[in-house]
Length: 388
Image (cartoon, rainbow, N blue to C red; front, side, top):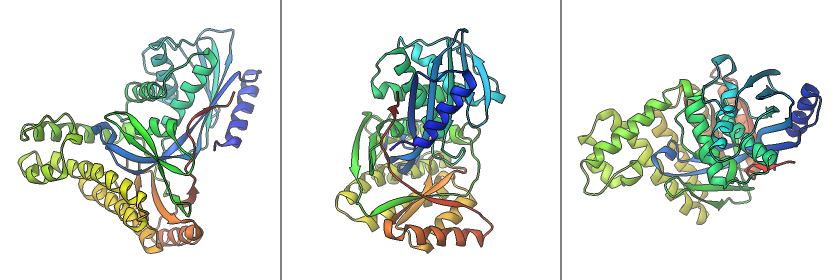
C-alpha cells in the first residue's frame, strides 16, 4: 500500500515547478521499529514494519547540467553536482540525503546528470519513523528507473545507508533502509544484519499498531546516537578480550556470557550493552512467541525493551516515558519508543477492535500531564516501488 495522495501531489508540484511531467516516479515507505533497538549496527536482528506513509521522488530531464532538487513540503529548490562528494551546507541539509544516494550510485555505474527532481513525503519529520531512509530509497528507485539500470535490493539499502552515514552525518545501521525496501503487507520484517537476510513474520489478523507522536523533534545526526555506537564497539572489544571465542560485535555475546562478564568491563559500555544484547535476545523470543500466538507475552517484550531504553541505553525522554505509561494504563498489549530515540514516537500493539478507545485514553492521559500527542493506526505495508 503506497500513499496515492502524496504521489499525486508530488507529481503535480514537479510539473508546476519544472513545466514538465516526471518520467520516473518512485515511492518508499517509512518504518516502525517493533523490536530490536540499536541492534542493526551491532549485526543483530530486528523486527520492523514498513508503514502506510512514505516519500515520493520524481525525475525529469533538464537542459542544464547538474541536479535541481525541490523539497515539495518546503517549496525550496537547490542545485548540486551529483559527482561531487562534498556535503551541501546546513541550510539545505535535506538535499544531502539525495546527493549522497546519487553519488554512491555512480560507484555502481549508475550515473545521472542534467535532471530536475522533486520529493514529497507524508511522514512527520522528526517522528522517529525514518523519513530520511524513505527519501534515500525512493531516490535510488527513481534514479534506477530513470537510467534503466538494475541493482540488487540489498545493494540499494547499503548505498542508501552510506549516504546517511557520510552525507547526512548519522552513523546508522541498515534497519531503516531494509525496512523501507523489504516491507510486507500486514506483516513484520525479521532482518538479520550479519547475514543481511530478511524474512516475513505473520501478524494475527486482529492486531494493529498505534503510532503515538508527542511531537518532540529529533535529528539523529545531532543526538548522542554516534556516541552510543562507539560505546557498543567498546563493549564488544572489551568483552572479546575476556571470552574464549572471537567477538566482532555485541551479536557475538550471549546474554549469559554478558551477565558473567559485565562487571569486568567499562561501566558505561556495559550499561549500553545491557540494552543491545537484551534486545537481540528479545527479538528471537518475539519471533517464537508470534509463531505460537502468544500475543500478551510478545507485548510484554515491547515494554521490557522500553525499560532498558530508559534505564540502560538512556535514549528515551520524559515525554516518551509518559506516553508508554499511558499505553499501559489504557490497555495496550505492549509499547516502546520506536527508532533511534531522544524524541520521535511510541509504537503500541493493540487489538484492532480496541484501537480507537485505546487511542482516546492515551491522548487524554497524556494531556493531563501537559503533553499533546497525536495517535493513529499504522498499517504494516509493502516495500518500495516504482510508480512509473
